[in-house]
Length: 534
Image (tube, rainbow, N blue to C red):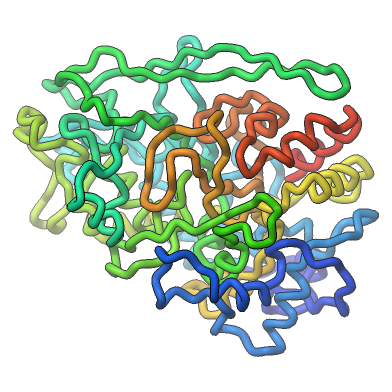
């Protein structure tokens, strides 16, 4: 049986399928908001998109449901009051528990009693510290030999975001991706065929591993140096932005390849991932405008990747550059790259060790024949995946307050929703009914956007260029300080406030950034209040 639902939650739903019946819409249609836009985009998709990827309309909906979804996801023009169901930004699974440091660690409110037990087992494995081999705790050994952390939770602090190194604080929740672009025709073909995302450093692999098991040296230490840049706003206010510079100290195995680029990656929050996974690909692609045919300066495009599990070419939607197609794949990549644990999807017992690192490859691994052929066999992988899919999005706060509503108007009128799409409705035929046909409010289009040279890392990832980033979802962003005890934003945590994060926007985000910089202080403050309510 499914977990009982209290009457207050039921009163927020007009139907038991999680989607309200909308009134006849009279709202102005914004760029990319309409599902019908997908029909026109079907004839203008980029050459890199696979022919089999749905780009026109959803196949899981009847015409009546299609019309309902179109109406309910159309951006509002009424900022006098909250929208229906806006409080429940994660649909029926939204957590309405007290807001505290565990706000990102709650299970989806609409999973069954039995699934709650599965969630708790996954939570235990997410928090488990792995140990080096050989060990008497045979179900927990296999760490490394080179690694960044011993447990998932140690990077995803309280299931939230990481933090950059500051003072005596280490860099365990931010790491450096190491990669280079293609250098010959064969490598270009591999990229074009989606067989690889990029090419690792020949010695240090795909990311810098600063830790190692006993008897082995870590690869090196990330060093970040900040310089302050003053930005003067239209009303005379001055904001200081810190610009980071990255390097590696104490390289233990020789120099990096001169073509290798460094890309810092802060660990992102874990909430709502299962809902994101169940957004129809056609709905995401309906927002794509790779050639900027409407001339608004926004050219969002998908990162088309190969799903390592099925072998199919599909839509990437997870990771800072939308490089992962599924939560299961993201989980397997993190096990291998961050902890050095093999899974059926990535059966690398020595993690990210390269052929050049002979001492690393000579270390024992944690594979136990009685448990299978990998260090984290299918039950472990499945439990961690289920946990990751069912971390609830917290309910909104203060949705009806005048300053929040005023800030919402600014968010829309400054053009932020051109990339931070407010609403989606998930698919009907989901593997877990808890995520089926839910109205959700992630505030992301999950597409790649060129964010300008200021945020560029110079590292290609699949079809994402060195200046492109996936639009990060904003739900829960106002609880960053509550959950993580800090307020660091963007892919490398350089922004110490939400205002700084906005002012770093360039490229396709430049117009919205300039509108924010040119707004009155009261309007800027209201917009921040709106973001803090998410």
